[in-house]
Length: 167
Length: 167
Image 1 (tube, rainbow over the protein chains, first blue to last red):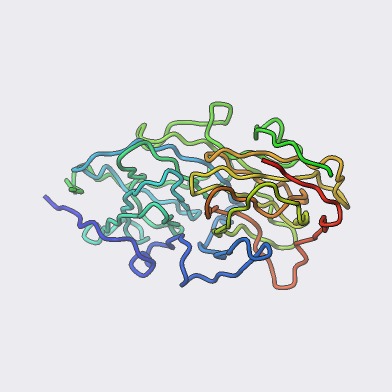
Image 2 (cartoon, each protein chain N blue to C red):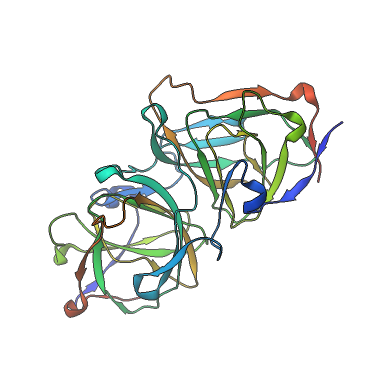
């Protein structure tokens, strides 16, 4: 059965899928508040205006998964980006495939995010639902709010594919 | 010299200034991802469209202050809201006064935010620069990105007022 390799999450590796949200020297940053804070500026492309959308802020409280686990499905949001920032100081897994009419199952990637790393899925990026590890984990989410009935979630089932993540 | 009372941060107490961002039962919430996550939905009024603005995501890395401390200034962003979510599991202080041409210094409030509580300053709310406590603290910030030269920060100096926060 296919097993995904778990890769470290880096900005370069994640670029085809969106941005890594983290405070490091490669981001534009500058001092504010009389030197009491450093601002790491504009770290993600928040792309939510399609179809009259707006940015909204939510919290996801996720139950942890245990490995090995089988991938259930990939989903995509054709109308907007979706950013996740971990609030609980725990690592988590990010499973993605590039945007397109259907995901290329041979090109699914799995990244292990460190506690200080968020991700922003670009509009249309295929992704597995959030995979928390170790303990219940909160995430701040910045995604698109729209009108009732907006078609902003496509699903691609994977249970028949037997794709696994192993420890 | 005037000393601010440090109050616990609650949604009700903070309503004149914006929203508290937290996952609790009083927020609209619903199950997603086959029951693996609970979504606490649309917790803040992200109000950034004035003057052609857009939502951006940044990280502020703040140095801690020690108490007692004297308030330096209040600032406001007349073109947009500004949301802060703590990432470092530490409490922090929020100092605010209601929107208006100048802050009413007799009505300044100081709230102690718990680690799981973020705040969203409504457009125009007067606020002191971020007051981290205990250790360097990261915050995810959702505020307004605009054009160079947009006038989106007014300052009201306070050093002459001798307003203090004590432990």
